[in-house]
Image (cartoon, rainbow, N blue to C red; front, side, top):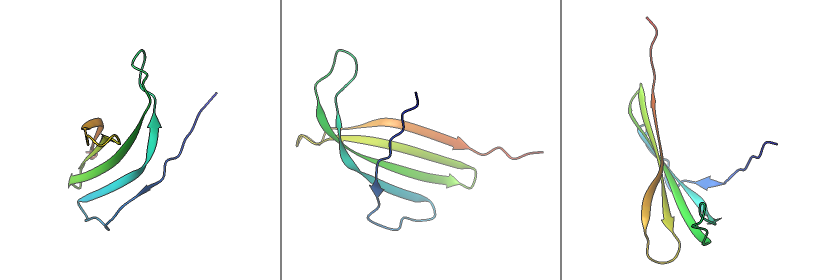
Length: 84
């Protein structure tokens, strides 16, 4: 069985040709393994293009409990390889 989900995101600016920041709607997060606690998480995704051949995408999670604790949740790095 395949599970898919879609989360809406928005940007508060048009970005630039080198950076785009998306803000996601808050979502409920229950935790992993034995650390199940239940909390609300806010997140963003910042895509930065260092060059035409290199992009970095970082997603940060921020707790919605008033502490503003923030951490890097996911990072993707893309490098284009050009043929001979």
